[in-house]
Length: 529
Image (cartoon, rainbow, N blue to C red):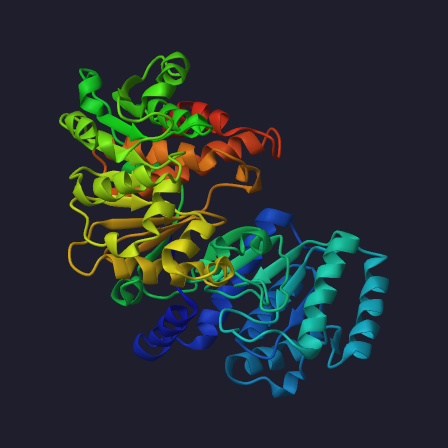
């Protein structure tokens, strides 16, 4: 699913009107009609039901007026709450305001808190004798960048109270008002919607940190020509089920284990053997032909008895952690391997740090770099650019902060900008570094500037070991021959999809190993449909 930033969407709207001569009124009518169709599918017919519509001063408000008119035609009972006098609306929105005025629909101007309170009392009285179909948030769309203030902020909070106290479903027009279209963060506060009908293309904010406010999302075709979208050169996508059909490797009936890669996992230290075990377990569950763990010699019995399907190579010069003295022994293991995972549970011993530096800069195999390896490299970030082969870096926000020299809050305030800037800085010449910024709305940023945001995953994944499973999963896909961008996209989608299945059974408390074990079942189920 393609995504458009607020600026890109505004440019596409202008192109449709100015270059393709599609009147703005047509676009607005299409938006309103598509929204009503979506609402009917989700909520049933509106006949005889109340429809409060919070109307903003711009085109988002105009969309809301179209919705009110169409619902009126279907036998519904719109109640309009204007956050600015309707005679101050301009352009297409003003034309729709004039048209709706002729219908004599009940309406109130809520220019201050007292007027809002009076309007809500009237609304509650109306709702006592008929059901509320939905409350429509048509206050502000993608162009909103300033924090909400005054009666607009009061309207948003009132709308949320109506949802929370009365259970009235909320439908957002294009974007929940107060949500930043590009970052997904609230601008002071924002509407919590049950349904969101977005126009033309979905926006990054719907899937980044704004998923909790968006509810069920429907992209409405408002008539923007495909040629205009193609010419815009959009770089962003949202990962959906199509990645399974397009990226999941096929399997021949005549194949054998040698066809599906050999992954080397360099991970684990005293007290952190579980990280290495989880990474290897996920790689096995993802169908890697062979998995070998390079581990500290003293810890080898743990791995040999826990992962009977994996091979181990105990490192003779490494006791409780991997050490640079074993770099030659590791080099001996590289021939015949098709991918490497470096980092889960490695620890930060000085000998381990020197080893990580050498492996990152010298190993000419695709490599997933995670956890302690990232923290080690963050101390010398100049080593990150231009490695000898593909690298997939998988930081969480705290690790990303250390890699960039920023604080975690700054990363979270604009995850996409931080990820794109960092990826660009790592690919000045040879484009070999792909970034996976984990978290709510995990981001995949490619060396060429394209990016994707994941749509799977849930808060139950906030537990130890989930990142280790992702590392092994990504390593498995690299070892099986997928390009780094494809491996990263498919990997994060499958990782979240397996967790979503578990969250359907229990909201939290499931383990990382359960996510790993569910992978083959999820793949079989989704590809069979």
